[in-house]
Amino acid sequence: MMRSISSVALRLGLCVTSLAIFIVDTLTSLNMAVAVLYVLVVMIAMGSFSAYGVVLVGFTCAGLTLAAFLISHGDELFSSALARCLFSLVAIGITAWLASKSKKTSDRLQEQLRLLAQTHDAIIVCTMDSSIRSWNVGAETLYGWKADEVIGRNCWELLQSQSVVSLDDIKNELLLKGSWEGELIESTRDGKRVTILTRWSLYRDRQGRPRAILASNNDITDARIAEEALHRSQVELAHISRITTVGELMASIAHEINQPLTAITTNAEAARRWLGRSVPDLDEARGAIERAAGDARRASEVIRRIRGLTRKGEPRYERVDIETVVSETLTLLEREIQRHQVKVFCRFGVQLSPVWGDQIQLQQVLINLIINGIQAITLRENSSRDLHLSVIESNGQSIVEVRDSGVGIDTQNLTRLFEAFFTTKEHGMGIGLSICRSIIEAHGGRIWADGRVGEGAVLSFCLPILVQEPSE
Image (tube, rainbow, N blue to C red; front, top):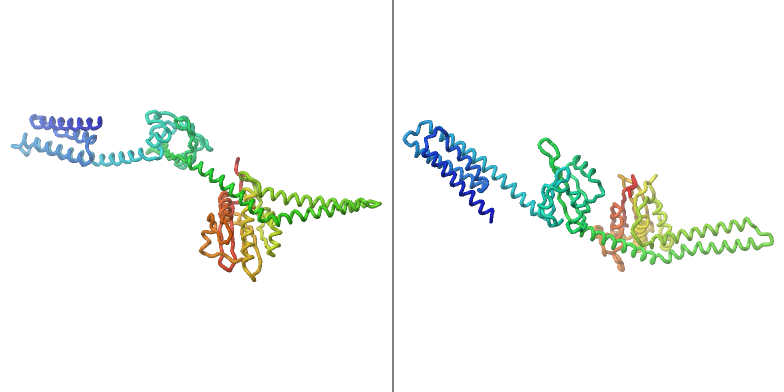
C-alpha cells in the first residue's frame, strides 16, 4: 500500500516538474537551454515507470520542448533558440535511450533477485570475514531467523557450523578454485541440529580481489537419517544372508570340524599307548601330541571362520589381502566343492596390493559367487566341472573373477542379475547377488556379470587398491 502511494506521488511530482519546466521555457526569454532540465524528469521516471514508460516520458518531454519552442519563437524559427531546442532534444533523446536500456537491465536483475529470494534453497551472502550481507526467504524458513535479525552477524558463529574440514581450509580451497562443496552440521534458531549440503561460490571484483561468498544450502537431515536406516537394514540383511549360507553349508562345516576332532582322538590314543608301555616311547608320544595340537589348531581355525561369518555388527574396515580371502573361502567350501566334484583353478597376480575393507563381508561375496558357480555347473550335464578364480591388478583396481563352466546366463538377464529379488533359480530368493552388489559398492567398487547360455558365466568385481590407509 505504501509503495503504491509513493509511486502515485512520484508520478504526480513528475507532472508538476514537467509543467513547471514547460512554463519557464515558454514564458521566459532566458538565453539558455531550459528544456535540458527535462533530462531530470526522464531520470526520475526510472524509479516509477517501466522501460517502455521511460521512453514515453522521453517522447512527452521532447513534445513539450517543441511546443514551447513554437509558442515562444514561432515567428523566428531560424535563430539561436532553434539551436538550444535541438540541443535539448538530443539530450532528452540520448537520456531516454540510456535510461530505458538501464531500466531493462535493472528490471531483469530485480526479477532474478526476486526469484533467487523465493527459492527453497537457503541463499546466504557473506563477506570474507563471514559477516552476513544477504539472507533470503529460504534461509529464514530453514534456520528460523528473519533477515533483519542476522544482517551483520557472523554466519559461522550464528549457526554454530561444524565441518570435518576447518573453516580456514575451506576458504583456502575457495580462494584457489573459486568454489567449495561439502556437508556442515548447523543449528537452527530453536537449537535443532541439521545436516546441510552447502555449495560456496566466490565473488571477485574487477581487480580480482575476493569480496563475498555466496552459499547455497540444502537441508539433507532426513536424507541422511534415511541413508543410515537403509545402511542398518543392509547390514542386518547381510547378516541374515550369512547365517543362511552357514546353514546351507552345515554338512560341509560339520565335516571340516569332524576331521580334525577325529585326528585329535586318534593321536591322543596313540600317545596314551606310547606312554603306557613298560618302557615309554617318549619321542613317539611327543610326535602324537604335537599332531593332536596341530589338529586342534586346525579345528579352532575352522570355528574362527564360522564365528566370523555369523558375526553381527557394523563392518570393520582394515587392510585386507584378497589372496588370503580367496584361500580361506575355498577352505571353508572345500567339502562342498568335493561333494559336487568341481575342479578349482586359481590364478593370482604377482605382488598383489591390499585393499581397504571388511574381510568377512568380502568373504561373504566370494562365497555367494562360488556357490552360484557350483550350482550352475551341477545344472549342466556332460560338461567339464571347472571353476576358475583369478585375482589381478589393473589401473589401480584389484579385480576378482569367478568363471564357471555351467549353464550360463541369458543375455537379457545380465542387467537385472544384481537387482533385489530377481532370480533365475526355481527356489531362489534373489537377495544373494543384490547383497553382494551393496557390499562391493559400499567398498567403493563395482560388480558385474558376463556370459551366454550354454557357455558358462563370469562374475567379477573390482575394488580400489590401498595406497594409503584412511585416517580415523
